Image 1 (cartoon, rainbow, N blue to C red):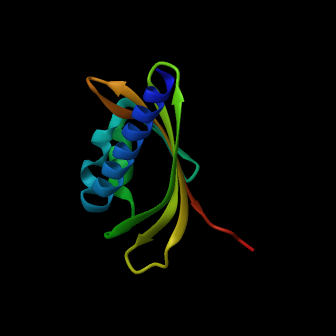
Image 2: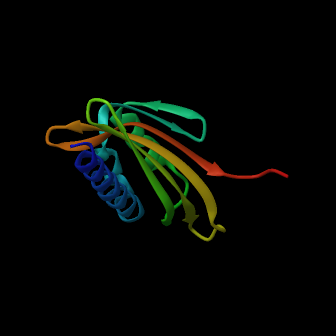
Image 3: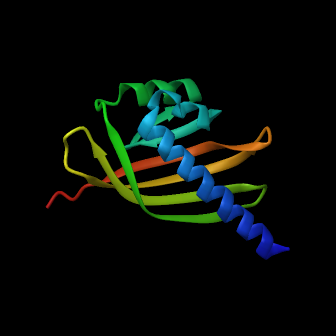
Length: 128
């Protein structure tokens, strides 16, 4: 029924986001494995296409230490078994002050699991 399907989607989305941020914080060089071969990521307005290009983008980020602190995670089902995940939290890198971030991920079923097809990431910076 619809309620059971919604609970499963919530569970998959929560598990996926937990594992994703834990991996990003501890083994950034492995994070691209979460992405589909043809995934698209928009990182701070820069579009990156394909798992290999996303991998290179992650390796090129200028920080050594990173920690994501997730504040909220929201989920919505997408027809066909995909799930939209929206995350708001704080990002702490090296000795920099924490910055807010917003990230939207679309995960799709793939070979018995889920992978990221779309990723939009933005730091929440206010220039006032």
